[in-house]
Length: 417
Image 1 (tube, rainbow, N blue to C red):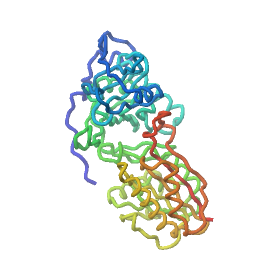
Image 2: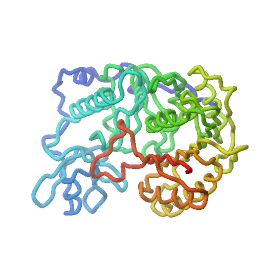
Image 3: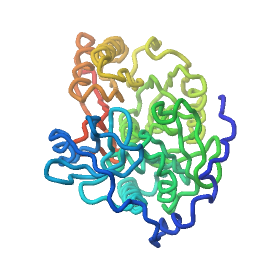
Image 4: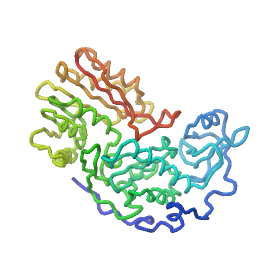
C-alpha cells in the first residue's frame, strides 16, 4: 500500500501550544480575554430565530448574516439576543454554540470535549479504545469530529469557522487523560482546499499503522490514509450484530474495505467468509485483521473485485452490503434510491432460503423510510423477505434533536423466508 511521506512539522506540533492555554486546559483558568466585551451582532429573520430557539446548530446564509470567519458573534432577533456562535462561510453563515451569553471559547471546548469523552467511556466500557469522542452538533460542537484510536486523537474539521481556534481546540483535546498525540486529518475540500493526509498538532507524528481494540476485536488502523479518520467507527454495533448471526453460514462482505464485518463474522463462527473490495490494499489489510485476531486468512476468501458486479459460486447464507454514499446533493436523491433498488434486485437471488442480507447505507440524502422502501422494492420478486432489524447511528455518534441533516446511517437485517 502506498503510504504518505512523513508529516511536516506544524506550528502546533510537539509542545508548542502556549503555556497559558495548556494551563487552562488542565483546570487552572488563565486570565487571557478571548471574547470581546461585545461580540459583533448578526440580526436574524424570524425563520432563523425560530430555528436557533429550537436548538438547530446552523444559521443559513441570509442578507446581513456575514462576519469574519471564526469570529464569535451574537445572534439577535426582534426581541434581542437568541444565541451566539462562530461565523462561517458558504451556505452556513454561523455555527451555533449556545442560546445564552457568549463565553470564553477555551472554557467551552474543555468542558464539552471532556463531557463527550466521559459519556463514551460510560457507554462503551474498557474493552474498546476506538470510538468517536465528539460528533459535531450532537455534542454541541457543530462542524468538527474527534475520533479516538488508542492514545491518538484524530481531528477533522468540516467548518472553516474553527480554523482560527486550533490552539484552543488542541489544548482541550490534549487535556484528556488518554491523549498522547493529536493529528488533524485533511480531506474536506471546502475546508482543507484539496490537501490530503494530515498534520500532527500535539505530540509526535502518529505511526503509519497502529492496532486498536473494539469489543475485544483487534483492528489495523492507518490514520494518515484510511477512510474517514482511519476506521468506520460508526458500524461497531452492526459488526457485533453480524457476529451474533453468522454462526454456521457462508458469508460474503461486499464493499468490505478492511474486513470489519468479515472478522466479526469469522469470530462468530461463520463456516467461511469472503471479503470483496475493489481496493487491493484494503483487501490485504483485511487479511491482516484476520491474522491479528488469530484467524487463519487462508481458510477464508479475499477477492479484489467490483462489488456491484461480483457473483458468488453458489447461494450464500449471509450477504453483507455496505456501499459508499450514492448521493451527495439533492439533485441525485432519486438516482440514489434507484441505485439501492437496482443493487438489491441483483443481490436478492444470491441468498439461499433462510439466508440473511445485512444492508447498510451512509447516504444522508435518503432518510430511513426512503431507504427501506428502496431496499424492499429491490427485493420484491426475489423471494419472500422479512425485516429483522433496523437501526441508525451508534451511541458514540449522537445527533442533535432538531438536526435532521446530521442523520445519515441506516442498517437493516433481512431474512429470506
